[in-house]
Length: 159
Ligand code: HEC
Image (cartoon, rainbow, N blue to C red; front, side, top):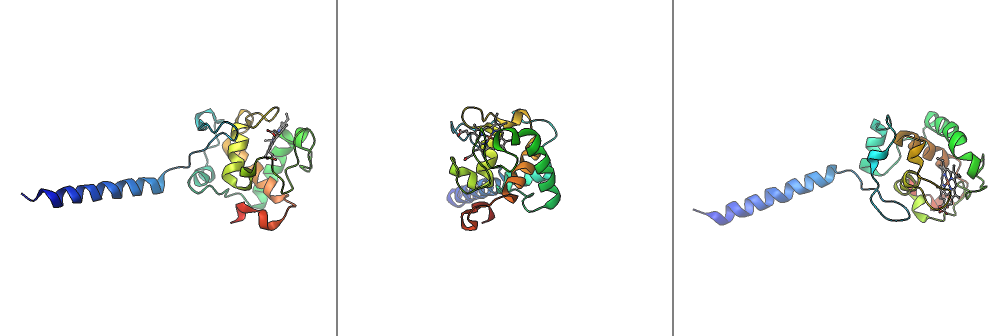
């Protein structure tokens, strides 16, 4: 019996399956401060929309540049973020969010910004999953990108 080709064939098939699985795997998200894997089971109910699923595959926020989404994001921002970051995200208790200076440069990507919002940062910047669903967070993120006043070259999320 010719075992060797069979073994090689099986190994190849295995490799192929692994490749296919990785291609469909969701992103793994990490806490911006501790680096621990974020447990998305804490997420508020109702936020697992098609758009969020898409984000989990691509790391890109599908709401960016979508007028309606930006408007909704703005009103969510006004209820949950403006008290600390200012009505125009100019900075108050927390830093400004509209310029191109980030304490945490990971915010230059949508994946990084989501990770920071979901898991929080230091001090008064607590985890935002407490107040907002994952889909809400994507809306708020689209608003933050919309009011960006920084150098367009540094807008990594557009690339
Ligand atoms: C209770 C006050 C408070 C609230 C509410 C709050 N933040 Fe913050 N936020 C802070 C503080 C303080 C920091 C600085 C934390 C640090 O440096 O680790 C911060 C940091 C951040 C950062 C990192 C900025 C950078 O330069 O890297 C982002 C992004 C952010 N907040 C977005 C939001 C959004 C969006 C909301 C609403 C969903 C929100 N925050 C709600 C106080 C707040």
